[in-house]
Length: 123
Image (tube, rainbow, N blue to C red):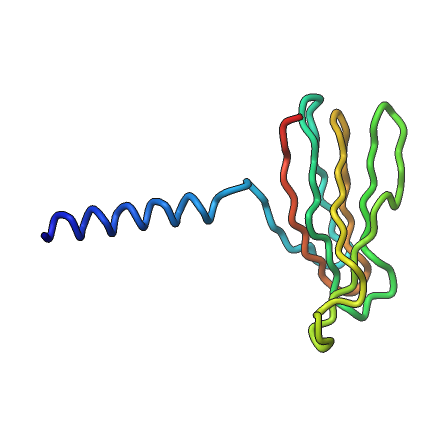
């Protein structure tokens, strides 16, 4: 009986750990004016699931994409997040996808921090 309970507990713990790591998403907080550069290989794509910024910034955070020696500044901007509103957001939070090869630079706004969730996916 003890062995089966231990086996059941081990199975539960291992299945939960796999669920928590599913999807390979990476979340990070960027401070004001901080940048993060992500290199996307040719056979991959970058999926930005969430890019939000605290309310009160003068300038929004933005994503720049360089591909084939061409740069698109402000290809995607951060959504303002306000915890005092009912939904917690003032802007819609959209998904943004960049096909590789590319270099993606995420820059936070000037006075508040940003929250970014992304993953690299194979094509």
